[in-house]
Length: 116
Length: 112
Image (tube, rainbow over all chains, first blue to last red; front, side, top):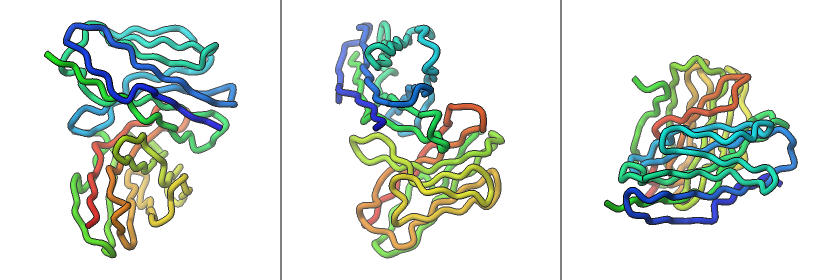
């Protein structure tokens, strides 16, 4: 069965520290998509990145980077030099190509608190 | 202007009342979704629609109904609200052929 696990419920760091948010997924599909969304205190969901199962290249966008490893079924998210504005709940999600709905299966989220 | 809008943003209602949450989008996407988020949990799918007149149940559709009035509008109804439907509700859109879903700002619903 498909599943997304974010084992870290809450992480607290001091500004300028690097932080990694873990995401482990389960799927039997050979074609799937992985996502990260950010939910700031205001509540909206902001799309950060999508990764296809056939593309294991890591990605960097400014202070954000993502490490996708199919061998360990992980899609981890690192924030370098964290800032207070990074404080939010971060969700990892999965969708499977065999599921015609392409619904998103979410992890339970990791709350990140960046202290000044 | 936001591409995906939801109204109302906040709503308090009483048990047994009928309530409708509305979603509109200007992204031109054909697929629309309704999810609910409970505290400490990720989002779960309630209903989805691939186009006007196409309605499909998600994993937690009991107690809800939807209407796709136009490609740009997708409404979620609670026919008789109950307290355990208190949650944050999100609408999302997606374009066929693309995998990313884009979310509206959410509606906070409190059922007393």
